[in-house]
Structure formats: structure tokens, C-alpha cells
Image 1: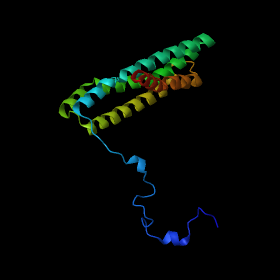
Image 2 (image 1 turned 90 degrees about the horizontal axis):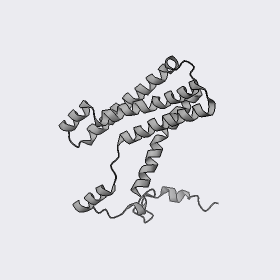
Image 3 (image 1 turned 45 degrees about the vertical axis):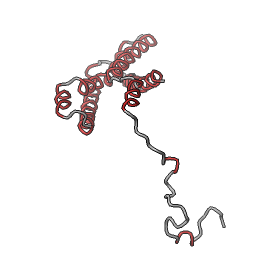
Length: 180
């Protein structure tokens, strides 16, 4: 009989009768003393954390779209290919800019912020609303792609999409380097 397999007698024992009060899935390392920060410590922590802006990600997205299109043009000398890469990048960058505007600068944002200052549920609802707008805008741009770019190359368009989507990771990496 295997040593790791519990016997039928062990299976009939009530939970917690083995002498341990913690459930087997609970990790004792997670139980730590929580000490809240003082006001001064919280202010110092905020000073060490650089302020982030959604517009910084949008700038990186636009720059990556332009760079990818230029690289495609230099490597292939085919303008439709470069336009496809650029359009694919802007299918991500333009909706992201719209969301950044909606979350930071729109009249709706200012009204909600003045009515409910610091309410997290309203902020989450705003993020979800603008994320929906962003996805619908990106889908509309992709649907319009064959009509906007005459000799559309779908593979190049997807390449532009992927390159620009990596701007989130690039900004995350740069942010972690700045804060370190």
C-alpha cells in the first residue's frame, strides 16, 4: 500500500481533528501583522510613486505605429504594406486616445468627479464604459480597413496591431525602471 494514500479511517475523521486548527489550503505565511501607515509614511510613499498618465501610453503607441510603418516601408519599399502597418497601429492608438480623453478630460468625467469625489465604484463604471467605447471603435476601424486602404495587406495590419499593443508592456517596463 502506498504511504501517501490516506486510509479509510483517516477519511472518516472530522475535519480539524488531526490537531491542526488551520484548513490545509491556508498558508501560515500569509498571516502577518498588518501595520497601517502613518500620515507621514503615506505621504512619503506617494512621493516615491511617479504619477502615471494614460497619455504616455498613447504617445508610445503612436510612436511605435509610425516606427513600424517606416521600418516596413524601408524593408519592402511597398507603400501599401507600410500604410497597412500604420493603419493597424492606429486601430489601437486612436481608440486608446479616445479612452484616455474620456477618462481624464471629458465633460462627463468632470461632472462625475465633482458629483462623486473619490468613489471607486463610479470610477470602475467609467473604466468599463470607456473600455467598451474603445473596443467598439477598434472594431469599427478594422471593419473600415478595406475601404480606407486600397491594397490592404491583412498580415501587415495585424503586425501593426501587435506592435502597438506591446506599448502597454513597454510603458510598464519603463515605469518599473523609473520607480526603481
